[in-house]
Length: 282
Image: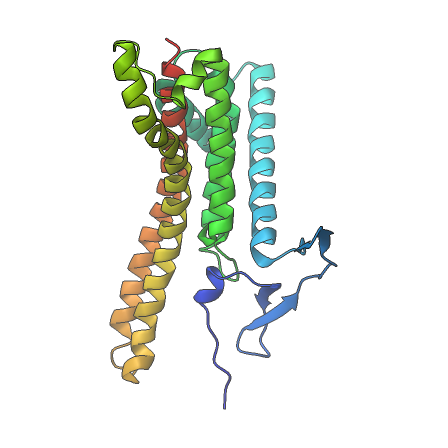
């Protein structure tokens, strides 16, 4: 009996092995990743062994860095020659960078927001390539891991709060403690203990929303594809195979769009949150 091969869930589940092409065992062979001894911090054991999603994150970072360096080199060479850059790759990446900077980051972060452009562009391209790797055969969607999206959200949260501290100085405390300037002291003392916890909760709902939105959207598409393909085996008939396969291809096409959309939305919302906290200083 031929072993069952799952080609969908490996894209969204993590493991200590990589899926590689293989003709011997159903087109897929598992290559075990190295296992390292855990680091003990007190009673807590921290396992830092690489997993499939960690490798995908390394690949996404490598692709992002390589493409940016290629585009930058082509741009500098063209500038030295006094002519526009040639080549579809360099021009395409330059167009994406300019669009994200001019239409997304600067309008939402606000004036003097150029200092946040490198971080936000890095976030955009890193998430984009991590998303796209989940659509590649034998790849895996690292952004379908809540730990990955939570870490990205925490980095955004730190950047947002540091932007608020830099822009507002001591006035940053007003983003934590609700203290309205247009009310009497008696009303301030009454309202502040009620609304301050809500203000603090609002700070943490933003990164929570960033993490859950990216995680859920990148997981949902693969689950839908799995459900459609499983219809063939549920009914046990190849006569209906054409429809589920066609629908699965349609979902995969939508997933390609979603990969770009979710990177865009994550960058857009982070830009908006930075702009909102900086606005309090003006």
